[in-house]
Image 1 (tube, rainbow, N blue to C red):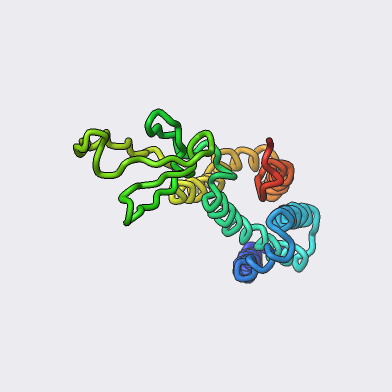
Image 2 (cartoon, one colour):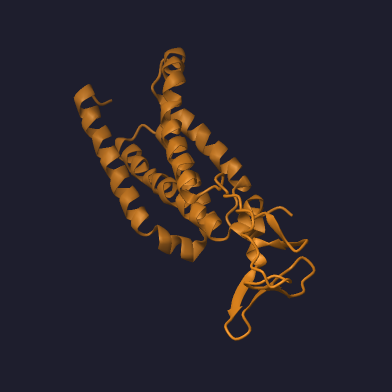
Length: 230
């Protein structure tokens, strides 16, 4: 049984090794994802975290507990990198992962046309603006500077700006907030749990429980297109 000051030194060593392990895994995270895929890397990190905390709860060996503390750096590195990588992937292919963010249909000459399907090309010789990708799949053209009477038509109504468009910066802010809140919320009830159990091991036991919950909830995470529900 370690005293107070030796316990502080060993605990500080465990935290240092956790940071070192997290740094190493962060540097090689992209390579791990390429080799094993995002799903396996995430599940592997959560499994290692849960197993490490269980060993810390049950073991009395200082060396083993310190080693398991260092291993938890793998999960920390994953949570600091993989969610942001997935968010960038979602925004890169919004039409696949964010169908609600598709542009609204516009109407030209009474025909509904999606903005994503519009392709405008200016014909310098004919002076016509061709637009393709109408609702029925046929191409059509619209007279350029002059209308049917030879008069220049007035400017059309301005297109409404989509101020509510969701960007990658907002999702990054949400990820940062949730990560910080996950560290703040447990402080509200962990003190009470420690008092009830009269053991600081309740901290690590709670971590093991939350790790198991994370493994269960991982099946709801969209890692690739195969995870999308039709």
